[in-house]
Image (tube, rainbow, N blue to C red):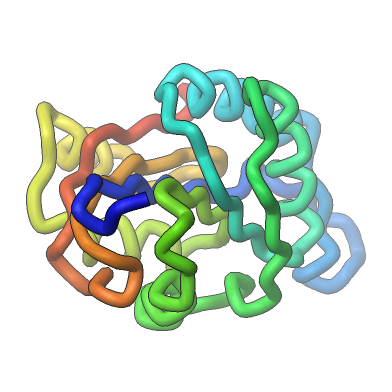
Length: 172
């Protein structure tokens, strides 16, 4: 892979979680979350982005979201369950993405708000079509994702270097 080829980052918020009497890290998906995670997986598969790597928070709701979404993909990318994604700020997520090997062209990050939404807003210096307006209007509800593109190596990822290509959120 050449660092000159555009890279894709998909920032994917976990689907709707339930609120049982467990600590936050162990919260499972709600029934609606399971349905939305599968739908988001179908929508992600429709983007035709061949993911090389998925970085997924270790929280139960993100792991369940990923398991349901990836089932819809034509091929499963290498998955790393990364505890640093849980409760990460946008800056911490950029630092984590900066560690990505350059042979990974397209990366999917499955995480939490407010970090995922903040990262999408911070990275996207430009946007195509009405993606930014839709993301601003809807926010980043559970199971939403943003598709971004940038050029260069992962170590060069910083605020404003990406283009927001697409945004999707389940209907409420």
